[in-house]
Length: 586
Image (cartoon, rainbow, N blue to C red; front, side):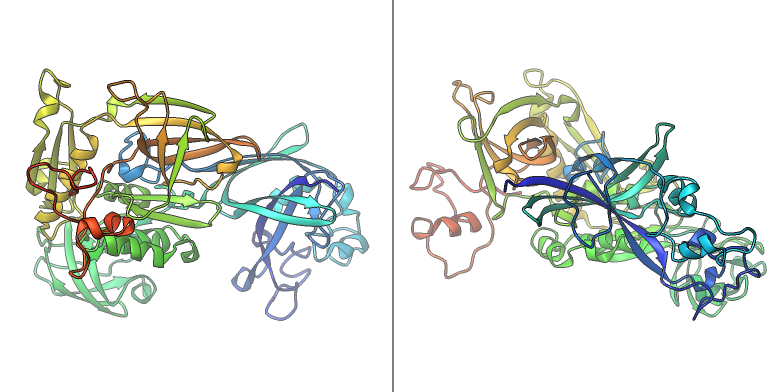
């Protein structure tokens, strides 16, 4: 029997594990409601005891084979999905720091439905024992599958949806790929079809959805003077429910440090971080600040995504993130005060200029974290006109070129606008004089970086990252669009490519090998062909790393050692014996 491609969609719905009026459920028919609930939160009659579980809805294409025991509804008309676009190190100012979200659009037919899958009490609707306001009725005669589902479950936004692809061989279903998204929209039309749209997991970090710090509900129980050392929070009990035992908070335009027991707050510091102590009235907000001191960049981004955007920690591969930061950001620590709620996506965007890339891998089901760096042992995929490339186009992006970088750090007043140059105590100016010459580009492209996250005064990091930013942006980055066959499907986001094509030639006209990094991909012919977009790799060449003392000299070193180590080249020839040039520093 021939293999047949197969796909279906899974939607996870919130569904109460309790039974109406039994056990922990205190609902009483005729007292708390005229009809039994549908085990979904909107119509729950004992919401305090709602026992949130999951009921998985599966939509399949109308094929003869339906997997046994999977409760599949053969109403799926079409599925279209795109992967996310990575903003490598925040270099594309047309994208947010988290890039462009991967999307899914699902279209399904509507139909009359008897409700047995959704409704625990379906039989009682028929015989009348599940309601007191009317006699029994046939649920299949009322509404349709999608109209009833949307009425019962209006809280679908942000819930998981999965696109499952595979093939059927005889009676065996083999799953080859599962891509994960969250629902953003659900719509019904007059033609009797439903459209469900979703985006990848990082949708949860959008500025309108997630903020840090969270809005605090506590206020001053009574007025305090400019030299007061204590206060009481209101309403009663808010201290234990919203505030840590110690921390930093904003009262008006003043930042304070505090210790807390219950609603009683001891002010251990007034007018801290350059703000001024002042008198405050009762009912003034006591807003908790997102304040950190020398915390590493990978830990900060993880905290923003998990603790503030609410992304499941299972999607953050901590061991991988830690290994990447150990190697390429071990000394990059952050200190900042964010005194009022700001969007998580925007906050991460401020960190991207330090060389961090964040993206969603919808197949591996994890959020990627990578610093801008040399390849450092990454798998490099080789693509040529003869072996893999079906079509290729190149675009120079001159709008992204920079000739000057003005890097500001150590903010004066965290309560004031962080994007004002005069609100910083330190600044560093870097310029690429060659690019500014009339014989070269002959213009000025200035980039201002307002880095409030280095408030402990890390001048070394300012020098390093300011120079790295200029080095990677002083020439127009090239963007390649490449069409490939499905056999190269292993290529994913941020992977490195070595491309040799006639459309990229050196000054002699010979095909010039280019090192690229993948920023997006999409299927153009399902299961047969896909297209990737890649940009010039920001660190081309051979870079040196400190090597163990017992390693051999260059000539005796293995290829792997030469890739991972660092040797000094002959000062006269600037060449090793094998003809290669010197190592570079970043």
